[in-house]
Length: 577
Image 1 (cartoon, helix red, strand yellow):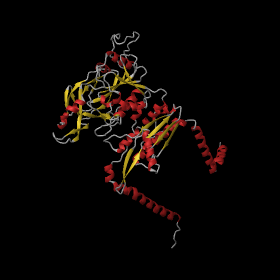
Image 2 (cartoon, one colour):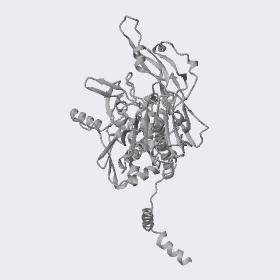
Image 3 (tube, helix red, strand yellow):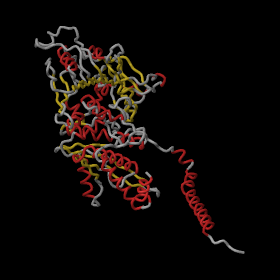
Image 4 (cartoon, one colour):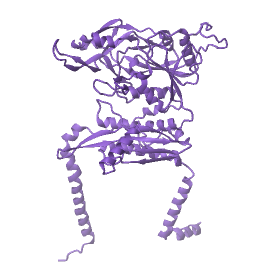
C-alpha cells in the first residue's frame, strides 16, 4: 500500500503541469457526459427565464421554418430597452426548443439616414400591422426630441404572416407598470401567434343571425381581427339541427327578436355536444336614436327567449341598467336656447367603463372595457357542476336602475349623489365552465326536429360558455361617408378618441373558448416589478451619491495606505542607530 501511494505521489503530487492536464481532462469528460443530457435551470424566484410546457410543445412540433422579425432595435428610451431585453431573452429560450426551425432577428426601423427611405420603411411596417408609438424625450438642457418606436414583430410561417404588438397601454398606471405588463405577455403573444400559424386545421367560428343580431358592418372590426386566426362565417339556424356542425364556437352578438324553440334546441344541442358559445346580449334595450333626437326615451326589458336556457346553465340576466361613476363622456350642448351651440364633454353614467378581472387570463392586464347601457348578471349557486368566474365588473361606485325607466340627457345636468352609488364590483361578463344540463331535458323533441333519428343529449361534456350582459362590447361604430361607410376600430370612443380594451377582451375570450392547448393561461405569468421608491430616491439622493462615489474612493485609498505600510514593514531595511 505504501509503495502504491508513493507511486501516485511521484506521478501526480509534484508536477503542476500534470495536475493541470488532469483538470482539463476531467472538464472535457464532464462536458462529453453532459452532452447526452439536456437541462436548464432557472434560479429566479418568478421563473422569468423559463417557458411553459405548452410553449415547448408548440415549438417542438414545428415542421417548417418560423422567421420572426422584431422592430425593437436602435436608440430607444430605457423602458423600451428593457422590453427589447425581455423579448430577446424569450426568443433565445424559444430557439433552444425550436431548434433549426426557429429563427429571429432584430431590425432598426430608423436605421436609414434618408428621411424618404425611413418613412417608406415606417409605412411598410405599419402596413404589416405593427403599430408605432411616438416617444417624446427631454434632455438635461430642457430640450425635447421625438422618436418613433415600433414595439412589435412580424411572424412568418409557411407563406403566412401575422403581426404582434407587444406594448400594453392601460391608462391610469405608470409607464413602468405598462412596460412590465408588456414583458409579462411576451411569451403568450409570441407562442399564440406561432400556434395559430402552425395549425393544420383552422378553427371555424360563426356569428349567428336571424334574431335581430348585429349586422356584418356592425361587427366588421372584430370580424377582420378574427379572420387572421379563424374561419369566420355567418349562419342562420332556421331550425336546422346540424347548422353548427364543424364549428368550434358560436357567437350571439346582440338580438332584439325572440328565439324560436327550434333555434334554441339547435344551439342547446350544439353545447351538449361540446360546442362553445359566447352570448353578447342586451337584457334592456334603449333607443339611442330617440335619445339623440328627443333627448329622452324609455328603456324597456328585452325578451329574446333565451332566459330559461341561460338560467339552466347557471346565470340570470337582470332587466336593469347599470350606472357607474367610472364612465365615458358624451358631448352635451350647454348653450342657452337661441344661442350658438356649445358642446362640452360630460360624464354619462349609462356608459360604464368596466374593470377587467385579474382572476382570469382572458381579462388580466387589460384596459378598461367600454359599454353602453349594460346590465348586470347574477350567478346561481343552485346550479352545480358549473364553475362561474367574473370577467368584467363595475367599479366600487355603481348602482342599478330597474327597467322600464325613463332615460333623459337632462340627467347629465344633475350632479349625482355619491352615497347613492354604493354598489360595487357588479358582474357584467361571466365565464361558465363545466358539464351543462340541457334546457330541453325531459321534453319531447319531436316538435323541434322532424328527424326521428335525432336523440336528445341531456348533458354536455366539459365545455365553456361566456355570457356578457351588453351587446355593444362587440359592436364597432360606423362612419357614413359620401363614398360609402367607414368601420371604426372596436373600442374606439368616437367622442374622446380614447381606445379601450374591447378588442383585446373579445380576442382573448375567443382564443380561450377555442383553445385546446390552454395557451391563454400564459397570460397569468407574473413577473415581479421591483421599482424604486421615487420619494425616497429624491429625499436621500445626496446620501446615496456620497456612498456610491466617495466611499469607494476612500476605501481604495485606505487599502493602498495599509498595503504600503504592511509591505514596508515586512520588506523594509531596519535602520541602525
